[in-house]
Length: 221
Image (cartoon, rainbow, N blue to C red; front, side, top):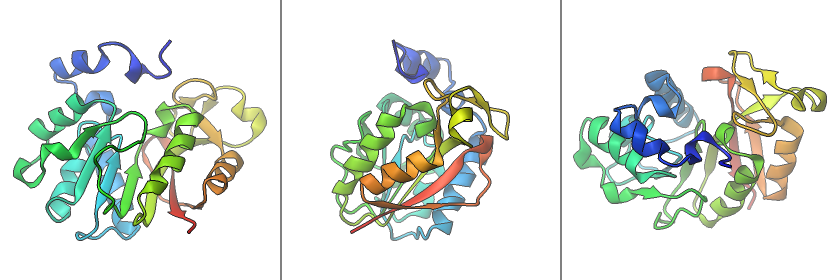
């Protein structure tokens, strides 16, 4: 059984063929892209930095980050390269600023071919769709980027253990779960996971679409 709707056979092909490359990454296309870009800039992203967009989808963030960054400084990964290429084809104002070779299919956070120059990474609205073990894996594998300064990611939280055991309605109306997507976590469990993998977490006060919570992780070196 797929752990996420995105793992269903033919999910991407069917959606892309129907012109739904925007819809399948969660809706609120412009709002969410703007929120992610603003969070990165607030966290210190400048044009000379090198960004890794994890779970980039149809380049909802990429269509804003590519023109902001110096050419060649944007890299993206996603479980579906076809979805990223749909974004490349339909969403970039100037496709010449992005080499499509920098759109890399990767579902396991191994980031094959992504250079060690990465200074900032973001996984916006990625981990709510994946079980906790995937976040654990990402926090382990991203340490290979020795120049990484900050990792931004979003999750849904439940307020306490009793609440987390049942479906929980977030402030924006989304119902989250502990054992199926969209997933929620406990803040204490997230902090313990980060500490176990040598990351220092800061919780942002920024309001995000659907009630997600933004965390900024810095490697403890």
